[in-house]
Length: 271
Image (tube, rainbow, N blue to C red; front, side):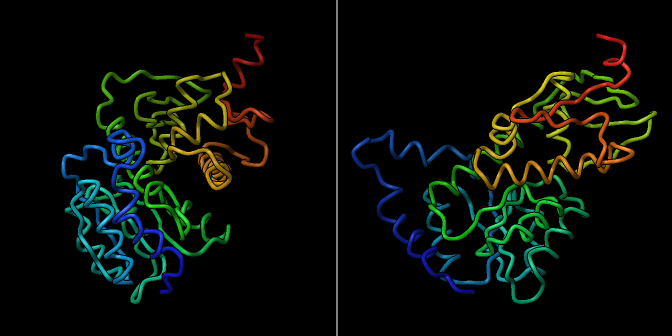
């Protein structure tokens, strides 16, 4: 796999971005956040890229495991808290790895795709398979570390959720702390990212939730890639909630605003 400008960017981080500059300790603190030795599994076939990523991650005080192929990566996932996954692997593709992870016992673990493929189709497929984020190479190591921290924050929020408040939207009952959704007492199968999306909307049921708020909460960033990912996510959720995803009744798009969960019967009653 070609490393092009990506490796140069990460290699520079070993001596410059991970050391304080004019901002003193504050500049370093913005990148080096306490991680309690969380373990990150790096599934990447290029040795130079693995070495550069390991340097950046260990400088941020993460423990790192490495796998050069998809099959080896799947075997090691049990000991990891988060997975950084390249799509171009020598044995099976990153898509295959992602599909296996989401169908297995570690389906809730965050997965961030690292790929030189900038095609929209590749991003959509990865998100459809359950990726939590998609970072296109080359990228700044500081941005990658910020995305890793954001993924861990989301995981902690889900783990610390306690009292389960329930919101009713039409035939659905939605747990506003987890996003778990039931229809007529039968569970609706949602991926972890889909459940987070539904949870955010359910917490403000009947009111629009802004696109920027959704992207920043779900991924930690608001840019063109994340807004495209949000559209894909909304489509996937509609396919699971709506009888006709092209004519939604419950999950509505609010032009120039974002998305809204509504109860059609409640709205029709004039409330």
